[in-house]
Image 1 (cartoon, helix red, strand yellow):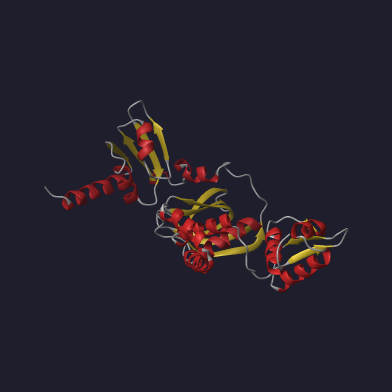
Image 2 (tube, rainbow, N blue to C red):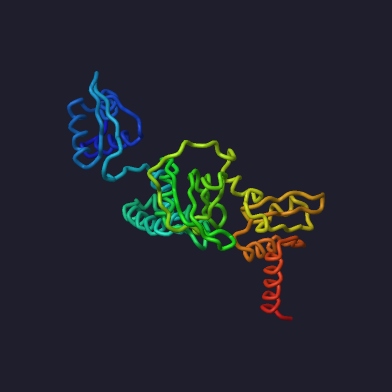
Length: 319
């Protein structure tokens, strides 16, 4: 039996927030209260803004449903710690607007966090590092609009600037958004080119969701992330970079931090890395940091950036 009306209300709210449907007798037994008291407590929760839905029948049933406003939430100790840690990581994210929202939510939660939980959350956060490497992240509105369109199967239109700096209108069926390494991508069906394409979100402008809908297609891969990572899928072949490492694939794979591209063994002592890069300079630095001898096989842009970086490093550390 729960002591006092306040404790009983909190226990009732905790039970309802589990997401399941409870019968009246079940809740009354868990709370140690009568059916009449239970109905009164449910009415109090409704008065506080919690949308509790009830159904008639033997003993009745109750469940918490989505409402028009965001009511206060009751979290367990573990849920509160997880929320604080997650919000701290999100507040450092590279998505515009979402970082501010996460920071504001974190401030509100930390203000009411008991000391025992604050110490647990700080312990996890202090021992965790998260680095956001996206230098040109889309705003939160873009992510939400594309996600909503993909969920509702609505066509989208936007102007897109490709790797050759050519801009033009695109009509796309959106399916998945993928955060890959340093960039956000949209996986979608290009209606004019009648093929699957990946689009960098920071290269979109004039994004507009259309009222028309489309029948879902079978995705080109069971794993959308792998599809985006697969450099052979990128339509402009000259923008694939190739590097031959003079080391076994096992050794290179442990040190290579690039998240896009393919790394395959050539023989027991060499392996080749192929990637469709968003920044040749970034790839030039990334492969150099592997710490083994390598040869840039192409394209000329990657070789030029590699030579330029080598000259700058030599000037920075003269004999």
